[in-house]
Image (cartoon, rainbow, N blue to C red):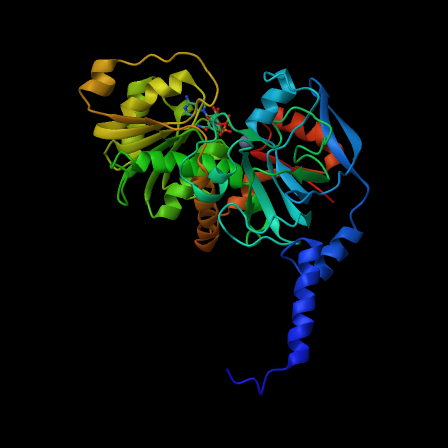
Length: 406
Ligand SMILES: NC(=O)c1ccc[n+]([C@@H]2O[C@H](COP(=O)([O-])OP(=O)(O)OC[C@H]3O[C@@H](n4cnc5c(N)ncnc54)[C@H](O)[C@@H]3O)[C@@H](O)[C@H]2O)c1
Ligand SMILES: [Zn+2]
């Protein structure tokens, strides 16, 4: 090696700088760490659900950030159906609880052992992140096997029992991310897209399940039944995949209009038909005289489950994802609905970590083809109006309601 051109002073300066950075603990430049650290307050506001249908804004000290921890300044968080159940009935018995799991924010401080996110991307102070599940007992899963684990049974920030840290949910100023958590660097997505990641991952999973039947293809004729946020996102994903024939079924004209904006080629308002035969005829007409190759059931209504088989052709497929919670029994005729038609059915529940990573690409692609995905967020409230936000959600006045900080 020719050393004649090497600037020794520069090398020494670089080595010292690197050592300083190591001492500070993170992968970010020392200046970024100290600047962000200087602006971190001593306490954070947390919206605690303290009784049914009532949040209190509480103030808690921000704990010391350990070697494996990440402190995130929250920018916003969507209100989910699960939050609505907790707000109304506390079915998981969590009260008092810091809710909010569809959140995102900016890393303001992190421990020296935190270097990469769960997909292997670098992490530094200033990056925008989301969390997924917490695998305290097996953190290796988060790092090395994105495919393996479905979230069922894993812990999730925003649905944790209260503890002495308290900063456990995204309806807050700051959230404290501990070792074993899944964290994704999503700095390349805008705020609304980041808030929509969690519900979108549900539909990425559903579409992956649908694809596993081998029936869903580019030129498939597809029915999406139910145009709440879940059905609407389903339509946007199918459209982003390049599927052209998508018929949306719902009873709300406004939602059906939005389904068209998100990529539906036609709509059917079930309230305009008397009886299932007439409704199936309406769906067939909308599909140009054909029944559907594939259908997605995105309502929590047992009647809607019974109906959907009538929209599907012989040899077609069905993905049932509308029953996140038990909505009761549905009646079908095994001969006509499944056996003689040879229908392939898949169920879909939550998502895997791989689906989370796929969701980031979907959100970028949807924007690229001009789908107004951000319009799914119809109402926003500041943290101190969280009770109003949840009441608006219960009143079903919009689609996705979000709490946005500052
Ligand atoms: N599989 C999962 O992991 C998962 C995750 C989240 C939510 N979900 C489920 O998805 C379902 C939809 O969620 P959402 O947030 O969109 O709910 P939502 O209540 O906002 O939307 C449901 C839509 O279905 C429509 N609908 C009701 N009955 C119908 C019928 N007979 N035919 C056609 N449309 C009908 C309603 O008008 C409404 O627009 C919920 O039941 C929820 O439990 C499942
Ligand atoms: Zn959710």
